[in-house]
Image (cartoon, rainbow, N blue to C red; front, side, top):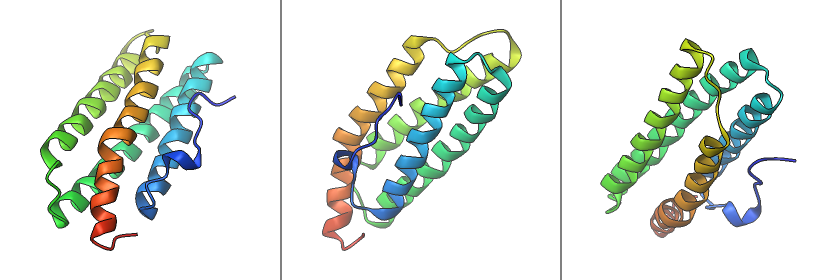
Length: 134
């Protein structure tokens, strides 16, 4: 069973954003699964890919916000920075020690993901749709 279940309710109807959200969901699920199976090397590979995908995705959204003058740019960008910093810090701790990702980390990731979709990305998607972006 997946840790984060992707459904059509999470769609923003902005194609590139939806594609990236699905990829991020898959990677979070992969990190969760590798953690549950105690496969640290595999987990490190997935956390590295997750960081890369988060960077790509956040850059995509932030470029859209700049290009289409979204009024929520700064608060949205700050949320991106906070999450990315958190994941990078956890990844660093995993690489430098015998640390593990705990349930609290995964629960906070899930909560952030759904809250961010509901409050930031849905608003951005409505703004982009009003500008003709698909």
